[in-house]
Length: 308
Image (tube, helix red, strand yellow):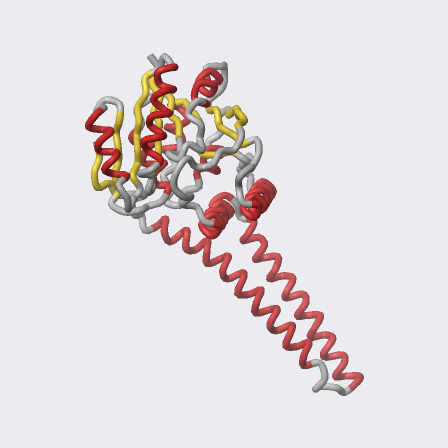
């Protein structure tokens, strides 16, 4: 019998967990496969761990959990869950039921088709999402697919069903700075997509603010593209070219019109522009250096405090 490992990252999900588990159990009863729940408690401050302990004690063969020593982030929780999974199929799901558990039935049927290694859920629309977040999300996918050799499909969530072979390939990518949406594509394998209508959380508040999503997007750009560094080079060359033109202009004007004092405003503007571009480019380069620094330190992706 096939076995599906369901990996569920959790951060302050005490309200959502009972609802999620009840919904997932209804799907398990409808499928002729074995389930394995792997909940990863990512440093929750509420009663998430207490609920997970209760579920594990009630169903020790079915439910397992990993408790981090602190909050390491969703990417670390995903990696920990992948490492702990034992099923020949592995799926990632959020506890807030924005990932419909009933889709597992369709995804499991589709992954049985020849040459299908992964079935990913893709939102057909962004209804219910704040308009500003929708605008920037679409912009992110457009820019990402322009500057990166690793395409990321717009609207695709982490919710997907993967074969063991693909899961093991992702586990070989053990970098500290992780961007799973890019990693899923980078490893290759054939992925099919199933569409669904966007859903809102069943309980609790979203843990993703606008600025946290912005930081996540920047990490995606840096991890899977050299375009920002190329931008720094091109911008530097452009500023140097403008400066050369400005120097020639000032020299010619002083030589023929003998007006060394005039034009101070334009000079100040050029200086401020050059400094602004320089600071921007240093910031881009510094971001890459920071990523390199965090990688070479070799710190663990996560630290487990409790595991059952």
